[in-house]
Structures are given as structure tokens and as C-alpha cells.
Image (cartoon, rainbow, N blue to C red; front, side):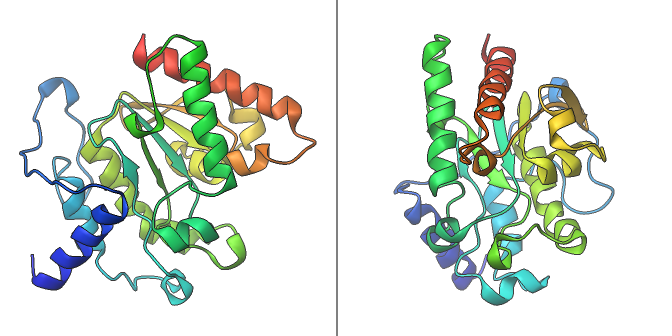
Length: 233
């Protein structure tokens, strides 16, 4: 790791409020064995190596207007990972996923549902990331080539963490992780798989912010209850 990459890595964790870093070997467990990607690094690579590999990424057009790369945040040894579509304006400014209005709702949903269900869980205990790491202009849906290029890093993140379950937030994340062409309304509340990891599909929090989506909001809470009990019971 050269000095510039190390500086960016340390700045990233400093932005998250992490002041002390420890170097550890990634655990190897036969029970967590997964098929590695067809090409590239092995599944046991630590997350900071993936961030290092991203570097000052210019692999697709999304880098042209970004402020910060939004890699991911949370417990790197978690049993549950939430995957969204891409950063918005607040995320682009802070370099942290789901910190705007949709992110605040997601935090409320995670912590509120866990509390009501008697599960001791806070947002910091899970891991949250997106398919693309740079904000699409105008918050548009990422293009297929952008998803293909950036999706490789999400796949490596998931292989590194190897959670017990993944919650896909919205249609873009759901389609990427499951390969299904169905809409999120049909997919939500159902289990799928990404490699050997169960995937629960639900609505993206930004969709739930719309006033007319009260039914969808209730359904999303039910989806979250289902995934929380699956992971933590």
C-alpha cells in the first residue's frame, strides 16, 4: 500500500468516527465456504483491501461528478447486510451510505423493529452498502454497464463479510443479487439466494417516504421483521 492509498483509507475511516484500527487475519471456516469469483481476489480478502483496489476510481462515467466514493459502513463481522442502489446527494457529500432522509428512515426501521421484536440491534451492528459507489447524476438509476463495473466490488464485499442474510432494498439491488427480472412489488417479502446466502427483498426506503405508500411501508416493516428473526433468532 503506497502512502496516498493509505491516506485515503485512513481518511475514510476517520469520517466514520473510527479512530483505532486493528489488523486481523480474515477467518477461514469450512462451514462458510463459498465459490470464489470466476476471476479476481479470493473471498477472504479484508474490506480495506477492496477499498484500496477501488482507489480513485475512474472505471465508469459516474466518477465525473462525484464528491466522495461511498464504500460502505457498519460492522464488518455482521450477520446482516443491507444493499441499496447508489448514493444520493447527502451520501456523496459525506462518503457514508444512507445518511439522508431515506437513510434516517432505514435506521428507524432497523432499530425500531428490532426493539419491538426484542432483538438487541442498532444500525452500527449491521453493514450497509450500495451497488454503485458514486452518485448517479440526478439520482437516476445506474446504467447496466455502471452496475457491471461497480457490482464486482459489491460482490467482493459480500464475499468478505459472508453474512447470514442480505436484505436487498429496491428493484435495482434485488435484480442484481437475484438475477430476477420481476419487479420489487412481486419480489418483496420472499427469499432468494445470492450464491449460498439467503436474500430478502424489500422496498427502498426512498420509495417509502412518499405519502401515498402507507401500505408499502407496512409491508416493508413485515419484511424487516422476517429477516431479523431469521438472522438473530
